[in-house]
Image (cartoon, rainbow, N blue to C red; front, side, top):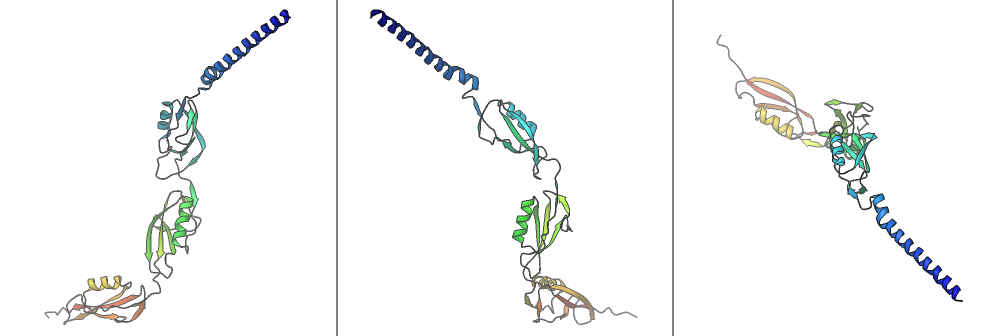
Length: 257
């Protein structure tokens, strides 16, 4: 019996030693070897590189023990210089291990060409959305008398009308000629007889009308430059933008002969 007890005690001692060694080794593996192998806890925050030149971004990453790779895709932003960073992956603020590669998308050197859409007869709000969605910039808006309120009548690039399908660089500015909704408005012609030419023209244009044919009449009773007749006459009803013809006095010059 004593031999069995002694053998059992010996086995238990060996088993305890094995269990103890296993625990020690597991602790060393999990707390010492594994963290040092995986650089556990040695992470850095990804900086925001968007808007930086890619060389400057590369130096910025190197100072933080990070590397970079430029993706084959590119974008275009007319407000940024070529080869500046447009996008990055991982995004700014992400925690990554040292040595991690950051993928950069750069701004293209040359603007891609895109086809001009047809904005004519399109509501201004929709036209602006279309331009924005395809990468064009809405430029100046010029309002002209037309029954179509806030409806695009013309689309211009660098001062010239352009048709649908015309190729222009992405990021270009498109000017729009838009109706003011007053094209069919009925107006009453103001009275300008007795006014000088400058004041009369100011009043006519301010009333939504325009100067039409100008006639000069010699007279010896009315000073130079005074409106002595108009057509249509004051009080007549006309549509927006209609011309008003005027007759302007011109003093007779008498000969000495």
